[in-house]
Length: 186
Image (cartoon, rainbow, N blue to C red; front, side, top):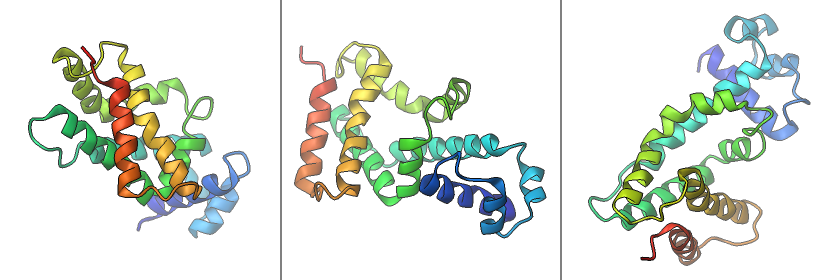
């Protein structure tokens, strides 16, 4: 792992553990085993490191979400996407916690969120196609995304907080409830 990667990973670990404001660059440097000046060689400030982390995670789950989708059946594709995101966050708890607690305004600006849109455009396009083909309700795309994947966040929280085991049966129920929220009932 190169120095820049160590800085980013260390920042992720510390920010999730301590919060953005309680994570000084001197601590990041010490724990990443680099000089403070090395951080500023790669990044202008702490916020820039946080923004790069956000973009990396969004890009990562934008790819993972669309991986290995079954052919044809829209609902089966949706179920696969839901499972992909759930498994991504369960398998990457730091990424989940970062997105959960840090990757929201005011820490991540709307401008940076907008810059990340190309990484998830294929997800948006999937749902727009679903609206067009009448698989999904004709409502604002942001609402569909929130209703479809907000349940993933809730399911990961239940599992990580050990409130539910999230067995296959429970995951299947969560997926079905999510589908029921967005599907076109006509």
